[in-house]
Length: 118
Length: 110
Image (cartoon, rainbow over all chains, first blue to last red):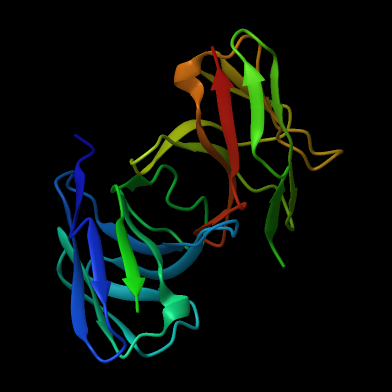
């Protein structure tokens, strides 16, 4: 058990659909992350939440909308996506997020949600 | 900007062969460096890390040494096993963000 659970594991959606990805961590961490993993490309950091506040938004298109209702849950709301958005979306958590020094240290990842946009 | 470059995969080895996966980085200052591993169908897991120059991280027979003069953090293992087949990611931390390389797929044949 990884401590970070993502649902659904697989999602197929049309370009006009609205869907959400869910992430839950059972580790008591204060920071949560969304990464996008595309084939043969570096993992792309999308969003960072620290203590339920967004601290990082890496120029992600508005068709991706994150939500962090509490420190254990993180959502990624999807609407009017494009086929190039098809990828593995990884959620991660860390004990804390420190932008000024050190950084988060170890991240704990979920198994990912495989998204296919038709 | 800050970036990490890894050797292209896939890397295919026979069991008990020696493994090297090259990683170089570009960053100001001295970031902490990491290797993460992603086994098939799973999320990424931290494999090892080094926080300052000349540090050696090690775990599960894997090693990597933080080389400031060559800005490198190459991953090595003396004798790979089939169970080591996975994708390996080199990463650095800068400004609180973990920045990953593109990953190197390793396939070990019996």
